[in-house]
Image 1 (cartoon, helix red, strand yellow):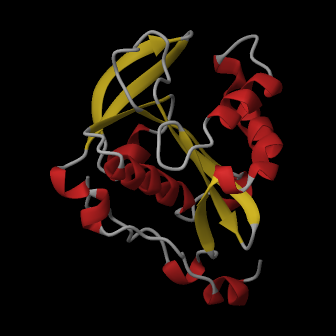
Image 2: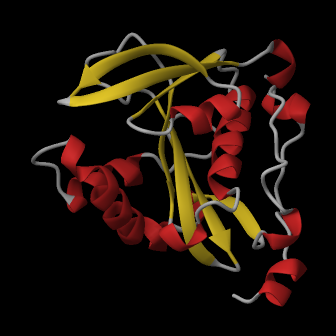
Length: 193
């Protein structure tokens, strides 16, 4: 996509600060440079299930030894809600799948007391560093607020600074499935729910 085409495009969904209950610094993104992104429910685009399963397995399959693309696709299919947990959102650029994020009950089998979780935040490599990941995270935060969730969790291997910039706080550094990870939390305020 050339520069002139990018200038014509805008982000179509942007929650308010009140809606996401966080002040987020967007100064690192030039809105004139971002592609037109819509954030939709995966439930409305089931044809993207195989692609998402492949992407996610390629990105995180090493964390779940023995996992398969088919098993991941089954988990994504189970997360095709709209007004309940679990649910998955997809980012589309002019109808093309470019990313995803999910709101699920549990993401760590060793920390089942923590629930619910932001999970599966993925942006296709050629669309990274354009603010799409932040939009996917914010959308899950907003969805959680609509579902009266008071606190969200996530774990990450290497994106602690990214989530911190979106208002997430460190809960702990620990090991999970032979990986050093960071567990983070986000408190939703009454106004955002």
